[in-house]
Amino acid sequence: MMVWHIFKKDLKLLWPLVAGVAAVQVMNSAIWFILRTLGGSQMMAEMSALCSIAMFLVMGVLVAIAVQQDAVPGDRQDWLVRPIPRHDLMFAKLLFILVAVHGPLLLVDLALGMVSGFPFWNALSAALSHGVSLLVELSLPVAAIASMTPTLVVLFGGLLTVGLLGFLAILLVGSWYQNHGGIEQNMGIWWVIPTLWSGLALLAVVVTLPLQYFRRATIYSRSIVIGAVLVAPVAMLLPWTPAFSLQQRLSADPVVATGIGVAFNPALGKLVLEPGGRNYANSAWLPLQVSGLVPESIVINDRTYVRIISSSGEILYEGLTPGQTSAISDIVDNFPVRTAAGGEVRTRQLITLPGKIYDLVRNRPVRMELDYSLTLFRIEGSGTIAALNGNKRMPNIGQCKTRVDGDGDEVETLCLGTGITSCISAVLENSISGKRNPPDNYCFPDYNPFARPFMRFPMYRFGLNLSFRDPQGLAKYPVDSSQLADARVALKTYKPVAHFTRHLTIPEIRLGDWEAETSVAANSASSK
Image (tube, rainbow, N blue to C red; front, side, top):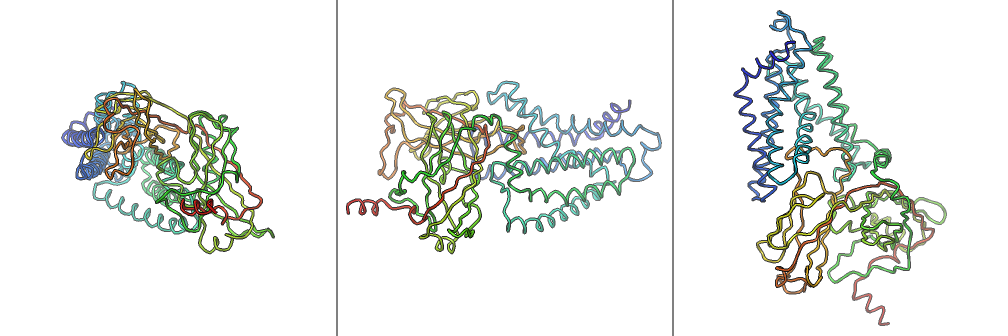
């Protein structure tokens, strides 16, 4: 076999480039390591982004040069004259990509993971996830396109053409997408879209590489690539229902959500806003009761589809509730469901309608139907760490550190993990007296059931800031600055275990009856 000989030839010719790319990879990982573990300035954050772009660029150039050392197009290549088995040539190029391009990055990521305190297998898993992501989404597509071009100049021209076609296709699809809705990038099931893109890219590589090396069918290969680029934006049109149905099938423990129910509970009464609380226009707060919850769980409302029907059966409104798909602080403002004991939770859901629709239905009895797409989170890891300069590794959470911020009013809690933590809850408590400050919660739903791809760094940083002093002196905390020596931070992380749907029908409701009241108005009403 000629695989090893071709690999050694390419390595001997390109070792200065291999060393340069490895240096850029080390620099990129080092900058991200410092930024993730120690924090950094805005300038360092911008530098890390530029360094990542530089790493992607030099890796792509090295892959292209290696492939074009023995160019496929044309009829004057040495490997055709000798001749060299075509499968040996293809496997030699793939070996070069794995060893010379991705090998140094794997070693650097593995070393940084172990330096960060992670066990060997955890660090290796994160490093492999990073490497496979870059291999599928960068190196292999570049190798396939490079096999269709004789020089770098032609390659860059081809990439520019393909990029322009893809941009135009996205514009066309995006115009429809904005008008009809769909899976947004900040939704938990967004992973389906880039996964489809990666799968399409991998399929194109699997087809075109053998087509080039075994048949040298350059025209057909280029047509396949252009077709894949034009088809890829269509994945953005994937409707919500089949995407969420797929997510349901991939649930880790779907049985645990079978007993969960959602019911209208008017006994809960109107929402009374705290002083300074925001009162949303054209909005009502539905009193709800969520039952059948397991202990230490969270339910996130991924999407609510609302239908409002008149007494005569006319559909007055049909659409989504807004404002529920961004990074969610305080466990989903418009549908908070979180319990330590399990059982049932009384909550309220914010329903906001277009102004004209709300004016039409505000004071008239209507029938309301709500179709929920919900996700149940269950506790994954928990632990405590000293509030002052703590440094501790906690299973299923990561390597965590604490410190008092520069303003002296918050305990900064930062953790470095090898997987994305969708939901985290933290509370500052006195380990002796048991006093606790209000908990701080944060969720950014990510339901990807597969290994997490990290294009920039194989570890994930997360954390919360826990207040213990109000600089304005208005709020008093049970655990204040005088107790920090005895204080600790209790952390909990949650993972999605079940995705499910529920339907709620409210036979008759006046939305105006469930508008939020200010505390002043509520007190005036009670005094009368």
